[in-house]
Length: 152
Image 1 (cartoon, rainbow, N blue to C red):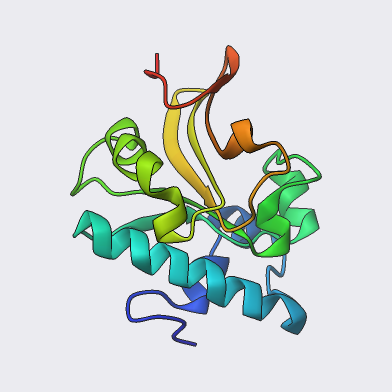
Image 2 (cartoon, rainbow, N blue to C red):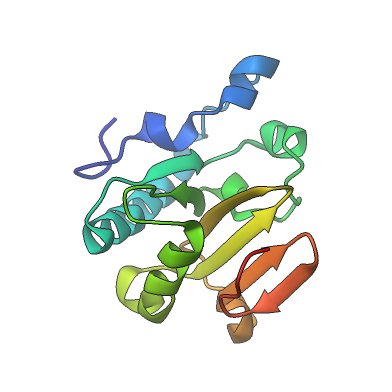
């Protein structure tokens, strides 16, 4: 199902871990409207960056979320979030620095630059956190910091 010009539902639910473990990662019908909003946010980000973006993790059913070590309150389980990279644009840090001042314009509720266990990506969610300071943060193996910080 095509959700926007450049994003499909299949792209937002694809998971090699789910395939490996035989987990059905099909979202319930009531979450599809949220996934449409997530795809619209991703489309705005893609249009701003001017390059293709790769969704490395989108919707995750609770079983898949547990299998990948996600927190129980993860926005991924509700269809609000996607983790992305855009090698044609630059590093996750460069992407996050570009997007951070534009979160409201692009429909991003929360932007997290993540650098954990040697991997780096940008987490984008349509859900705005209850604590405004948590809207743009960096998470590394050393913990959470406000704003976009250099990754180790």
